[in-house]
Structures are given as C-alpha cells and as structure tokens.
Length: 367
Image (tube, rainbow, N blue to C red; front, side, top):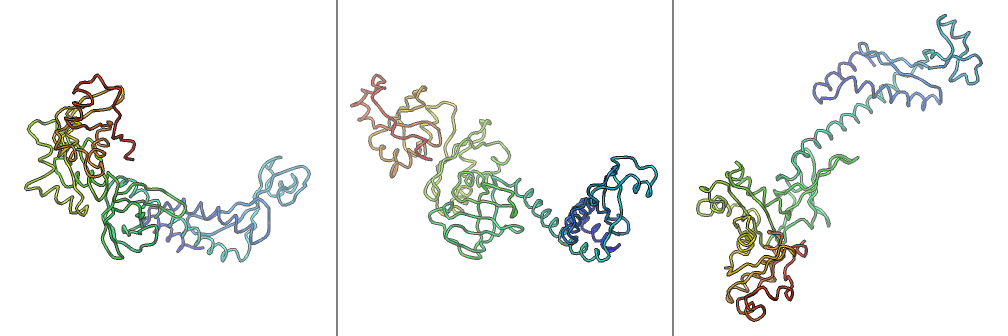
C-alpha cells in the first residue's frame, strides 16, 4: 500500500460517506486473518497501517513471563528487557514480523474489504431510503415475471410484487410501468428486500391522499378503508370543518378525483361514505348505496341489526354479500340485514327477540 491507496480511501469517504478510519480498521482486522492463514501461524499479531503513508507493519504480541511455554505467545523477562529494560511480568511486547511479500496479500485483502464495505454501505443507504417509504406508493418498471413474483425495478433496488398481491384484472409484462404499495422493507444479508402489493387497502388510502388536496392538508380525514381489490371498496371520510363536504372533496369536480383513482385501479368501484361517531348513522352510511329504515345497536355483542325496505334488501346485501361484507369490515361491527317484512315477521319490529337473531356478516369473516 502507498499514499495513492490512502488518497483513494479519502475519496471513497467523500463519495460514499464511509469513514476512512472505519475502512482502515476493517482492513487491519482482515489482514490479521490473512496473515495467519497465509503464513500458517497461530501467534497473536497486530496489523498497523500508517494513516499518512499507507505503510503496513505486522507485529507479534507476546506476554512477558518468567518461563516460556509457548514461544509463539510468550517471551521471557530477560529477552523482553533486552528490547526495553522497563518491561515487567505480564506486559505485552510487540515485535515486528512483517513478511517480505506481505504487500501483495495486503493489497488483495484491502480490495476485498473495501468492495464489501462499499456494497454494505450502498445497501444501507438503499434500506434507509426505502424504510421511510414503507406504507407508501412507488412506481417502477417490470423487469421479469415468474410463477410466484413480478420483479419491479425501483431505480436503485429491485422489489418483489407477489402474484397473490395482484388485482384480478392486473396483467403486467416486462417493461410495463406499475404503481404499487410498499408493505414491507427488510434488511437481509442479500440486501434490502422490498415487498409490494396492489391489493392492500393502504394503496387506496394513499391514492386518495395524493389525489385529494383536502386529505393531504388534513382538512378531510380518512377514518377507515375496506377493500375487495379489483371489485369494490368503501372508504369512510370525515371533516371537522362543517363547511367542508368530505365526500364532495373526494369525488372532485365532475367526479374527476375519484375517477382518476378508479382508472388507476382498473375500474374498481369505490363507495365514499361519511364517517360518524354515532354507530347507527355510521352503519347506515356504510351500507350505501342502499337506503336504511332503522339501525338497532347491540353494544355488548358489537352487532347492529339493519332494517331496509323490501325492495332494497338485495342492494343492501350486494352480489354474493359483498356490500354487507364491506360495510361490516369498514365499521368493525357485525351486521344483520333484514327487510321490513322480515323484521315484522321475525321480531315484530321490536327488540324482544334479540336473542333469536344471528349476525349474517362478521368482520372477521372478511379477512
């Protein structure tokens, strides 16, 4: 090694942000292993790199003893005092043992260490950059597709979009641009691993935050999201400002804001409803677009019985129970939907038969 190498380490410190001192310490540690491996020795050694000149020296470290049992690790008190009269028992004596051709080994080892540290530093920078983007939206280019994953180039790193995290109507090929939601960022031995999703409710939430200025500014809040990706979603919104219409803000002029999100989600239907602290109102809103006649709340069971007009029953339940299922997931309440005629026949439109009814929709069943 020489001055050029020291200058190169200084340049790496400037460009990559890796401390020159940290690199030199790592090289010294690696050279100890290289020395022992290449020269077949078990002695205790220290490697020193001059920070100014780059000169490398290897020192054998020996303990001062009265009687030497292992010449590789020990030195007699008399021999030690020939080097320096001040040495005492149990002191450590360092004797230079730098091999003649150690420079070649040192150069090779240093290159490996520096390359590894640069790679680790770059991985660390990438991880730090993306850990802040967890639960956020990114756009990348599809690199390749296999049976289990789509690999998406995000610039400095390749992310994985599992096939089971695609919407039913998603079709991507190499070179396509894809907008996804980051669900997980992990720092593995092979570098940062980033997992994407296009089905996560967070994708819908972030799209609204990006598309609706009132949400971004905090004037309108998203209180809950329920989603069956590719088919239908419900989102509950709220504004503390009585002069701001939260639903109108999300819909936008002539429906432009919500339509942009629907287009991004390839036609997924989105119901935007008002959140309310009153369970009766919130459950009724969540069952939109159906009309609700009455909501009976059972706090202990966290259940709500909803009565709708006879002609609205199928709309309230939805195709294969989708509307009711999403409403239950949105509110976190179990929901039992009855038509007016069913309620009259079964309960006499009263709560006397509360113990006889069972919830038809359980939020846990929608997971």
